[in-house]
Length: 234
Image (cartoon, rainbow, N blue to C red):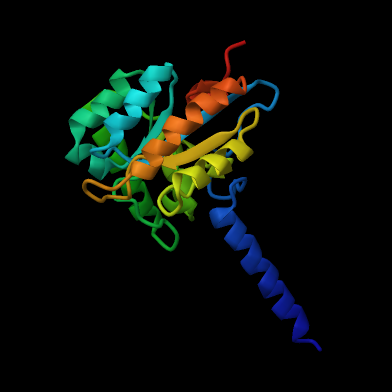
């Protein structure tokens, strides 16, 4: 019988650590947001892993409906496609930090985590002129040392209210999932790249955006960047 106590304790500790690393509302490894204010009919559409060769297609759709979005960019992709990275910012969208090489951060040293964030920050600033205020961890995974790195670079973590799984599902499934999750203050996560892949196939993402944006506008939602969603003007 005595062995049941440490086993239960170990199980609880394991569950807590799993939540701290991947839980969207977890704050253990740094200040983070997964949802905006719930009293305003506004939400944020966000894109991870870009820029990619297909990012301009998404920019065209956003321009058609005159809505802003937030693009969490990988520094290595910014270095590879600086003109596309600049076009995101010049179109009025917000750029966030998504690390340099898109690694899992857990089990990495604090120094390695800081290097990932700092290299991405420097690449984005160098090529676009934008200084990111927000960071989204690759795969939504956080670890010891991230809080310090965010503080040094003045970055606030951002998770999501819903993720579209647009890398593995059909467009109609992605749209249905995002539409069902839409609510005041929601942060919706899609992908305009596929980690560091060159010329990734993001046709599902493009088609999902093409269908989702007018649907949510018809419901009366206003689209905001992460910065404006989390700090609305009064």
